[in-house]
Image (cartoon, rainbow, N blue to C red; front, side, top):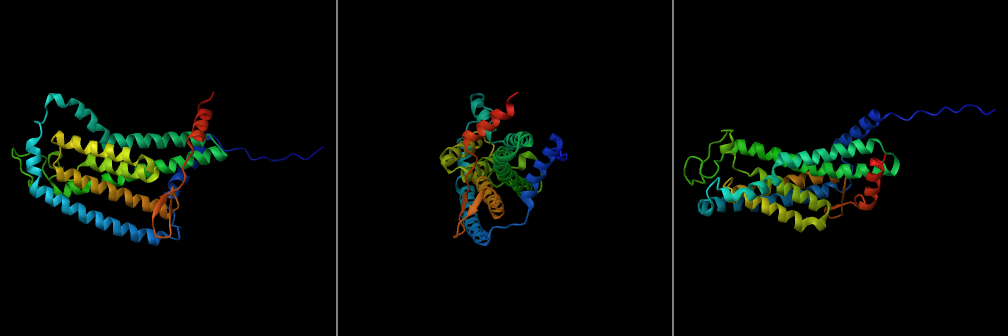
Length: 281
């Protein structure tokens, strides 16, 4: 008679879910390990400085020469015929975008906890990319909220005049939270992040971001300089998060010259197979 073999029982689903979630968080804070991260950091600093300088100059020019003229050309706030624009603009609202991305992360974690081997690795790869999208938007929005409070720029016609220089720093209300535009921050951070992972979507994503930007102008929610500043904050924020991921070899690689490029992601056909397996009775 052969001796009994002791086989360790497989951890239950709650333990698996905890392990998957812990691994997802741990990879974000682990020590950077990419040998070319210094080159990428220098390139990020150069690009951020150039983009910030050009963007700041454009914001000032618009504020002085164009903001007042543009808001006077827009239809009155609350015009009934603008209801499609009011619906469209919500696709750039940070609460909605972050909620969708957060829900995606939760779903991936729940499914991955019940899978093993290659299927789990595939789902974790997708989860890493969702983390990148979520944090790109979240960091950019967080920075924008601080700037809004510090700058305190009045929205168009707040105070009854078309005054682009209506500033009340530290005021802290929505009426004085015009610069930068939160919708523009969200839309451009998301557009940059998605394009960084899947370059073929670049034209579609930046078209989406520009449309969101235009809706904020038509609805008299912001001045032109506000949306330009929002686009700048969103892109620089997403660039910083991309470097953070690349330095830890997450979703991105770094070339010898410091250029950050996306790693191959989950194959759609294989991911569909995993999803079907997870939903099967």
